[in-house]
Length: 318
Image (cartoon, rainbow, N blue to C red; front, side, top):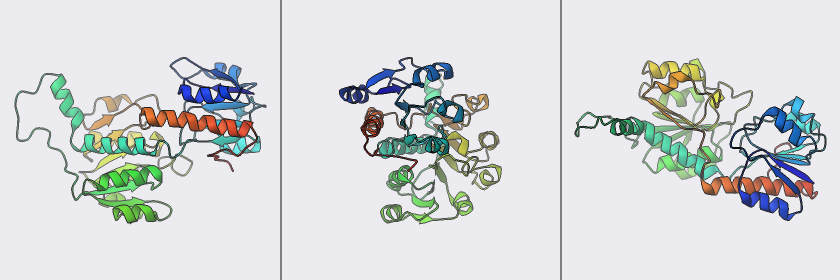
């Protein structure tokens, strides 16, 4: 059985696969694999562990006739045509739960960095511009009694709400269905989207990306935000109309925004780089040693189960 891994992930996962006597091939270069090289390596693979940087469309899926499973090394799976893999009898899995805490931690870090203008302060120090304490230097926003709006109350959204509640905030959330756990732990209230956008001082985005959520926060929705609002996105860049968000940031129509994801990732809109009221991170939501190792191990276990004729742990296309 041949397993191809599209990037160098935790050695724990590779060890698990080789322990099962699978032939494991890992793309070792520290950059996304080219499409031509990917095709060459997966054409006779029985299983693939893939990253978000690899787009498995119909053309690519047709080139993997032996493949039984694509184990996505992520929670999101918008890089895979799941409907077509289902037609081709290929199982698709993801890595939920194991990166919930790390991503929620980062969402909270972005909320704090945006609210207290931490990046602006750091630049002042590095540029040698700090001369003395000043009463009006980098005035930010306290979190106490502020309304935090969670858009997408799944695992990560719930954990972000729990963290925000510790700062004595008021929690509201938007979701397709009620989240009783979130409500019990945080006292959160489910609201229609427009109401949440109008009421929230801080908004954290945690939706999956699909046809229904592309530009979910479009020009009309972003226009509902308070001038003092902070918007943080650790989900997928395409959920927010990035050009419109940049426009309102430039015009100071909201206080600030925190980005861990981008609409045309890895391309970063140059206009973002010239804004002071943004915090920009390189998609590191799950970038802890604990989370990334657990993600790799879960992907490997899914592969092992499928190749041994067992049920995968986190199948998407059931």
